[in-house]
Length: 331
Image 1 (tube, helix red, strand yellow):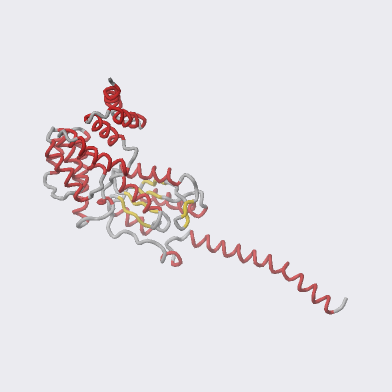
Image 2: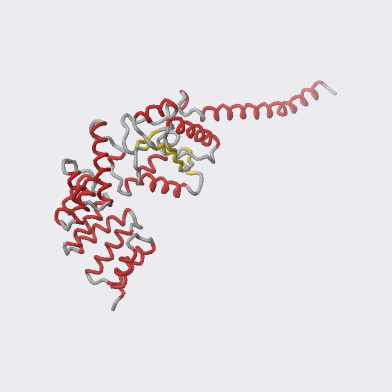
C-alpha cells in the first residue's frame, strides 16, 4: 500500500474517533447543565430569577426557595408553600423532594400543582387543569402562602392573573402600608368573614366599622351584610366603593347587580351580570341573576336558558333555582 493510500485511510478513520468524543462531550455538558438546574439560586441561574418579595402578603410570589428563604418565610408567618413545579421534569422532581423536606423541617404545608413549562412554553396538556386547581386552592386560603415556579417569572404570573379574574383582591399580592398595618387589616377581614359565615351580619358591620379603605373584600362583606339586613341602598353604595378600587371585580359587580334587582332596575342589573359573565362565563350566581333580570323583563325563554345553564353548574341553592326555572317555563 502506498503512502497516499495509508494517509487516505487514516482520514477516513478520524470520524470514528471524533464522534464518540463528541458524544461524551455532549453528555458531559448535559450533566453539568442538569447540575446547574438543580441549583436555581446558584450564581449561574440567579441572574434570571425574579427577586424574593420584600414584604410577605397573603399570596406572595417568587422563585424556588432554598433553606435561607425558607427561614425568612417561616419567620414571616407563611403557612403554605405552593409549588408549580412538575415532577415529570427530572430536575424539578428533585427540587420538589428537596422542598418537601424543607417544609417538614420548618413546619409548613406543601401544595404541588404540576404546571410544566420551559421558557413559558407549556409542555403537558393538563397545564390549564392544574392551573385551575391552584386557583381554587388559593381562593380559599386560611393563612399566608408563598407561590413559586422555577424562576418566579411565568407560571406564577399565570395563576396570579387567573386569581385576579376570579375576584381575588389585589391586596392579596400587593402590600399596603407597613407589615403590621397590612396584617391588622387581613386579620380584621378574617374575623369579619367568620361572622359572615355564621350569618351574624350586624357583627360583620361592627368589626369593619373602623376601616376606611375601599378594599374589595371590605366592600364585599359590608355590601352583602347590608343586603341581608335589607339595607339595599347602603349595600349598593358598598359595592360601588369596591368598584372604585377595582372596576372589574366580579364579586362587587354581582353584588351591585342583585341590589339593582331588589331596587326594581333589571336593565341595570343585567349590565352588572353581563360584566361578570364576560370574565367568568360559568359563574352560577351571575347566571341566576341574569335569569331573574330576564324574568322581570318578561323574557321567559332567555330566563329559562340562564337558569338551565346555572343548574348544570350545580349551584348551592339548586332548589331555589329550580323554582325560578318553573316560573320561566310556566305559560
